[in-house]
Image (cartoon, rainbow, N blue to C red):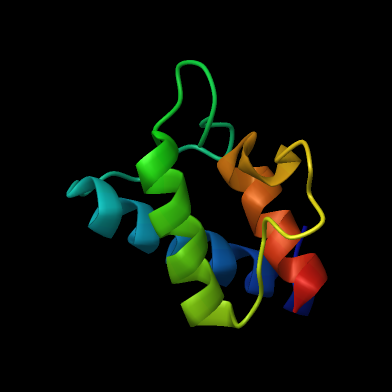
Length: 87
């Protein structure tokens, strides 16, 4: 997929990876399928709150609001899609 939407998705994904690396104090290039929250995930409950707060500051959107099941934290890809949908 190419074009403006693909470039925006790639930019948002890179920025989210940057947020993850700051929170986790790592320098990883996470796969789109990596689980952000839940069982066997990158983030614990405290880190999820920090992550959501940093994304709200970065994009001006609350990724968790209205997402009762927290599907946006199922994967890096799902999170990027949620941010893009809210922009």
